[in-house]
Length: 283
Image 1: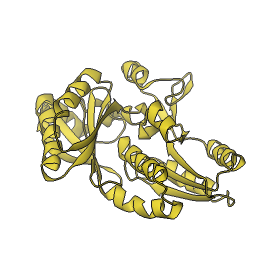
Image 2: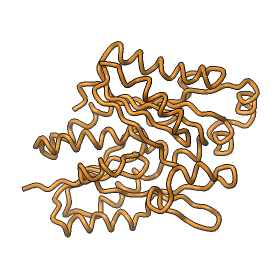
Image 3: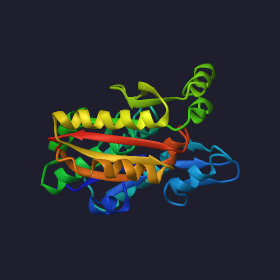
């Protein structure tokens, strides 16, 4: 009988309850400061990273290829026959390509490495969808075949409080970034079909940005039912308020709340609010 493992990386932002519920295997990225390296969500929390950004903006790195080999070896020793790995977009991280390389050396396992072309719970939603399919008795082939259609139903949008960290990280040019700061522009950022960031729209001021983000969600919900996750990066209270404002919408089939991995957050800074939308029927 097939024994199927679900694998993801720590940027999928799944909480411990969901990881345990679906027995998800985790590959953790690294947070690297001048004097120490931390394992994302293991020995450093997202809030600790956000709180320290004014002092030092750390570097980040993907899980080592040895971490990946160790995981595949452990799965094989535990009797797994198949594995489905869903990770952060290949357009945003080298995790996908490295995982593909590692998987190719473990021929005793049937492994699918799937590019989420997303991040945070955009990728996490796909993992949860696979988990539900597994619980419903779907086969490895059925789950793998369903993944592209699930991916097409997922959208990610977020707003940033400051352009400072996008400028520092080279995500936007210094001139355009400085002009944006001067004009108090707040971009709503999304991820395109190639899995890379793009500016969905720009508004002036944080209040307008939150209003626009809510409009995006409500426009979707006026046309279809959907699962919604509200995410924050060092902005718990504002994220919680956004979450509360959505709680009574009858077209939301599931409403989640959580924090965004600092692996993504170091490029956007504190004060981020994001939404992940998964249109129904999802699985």
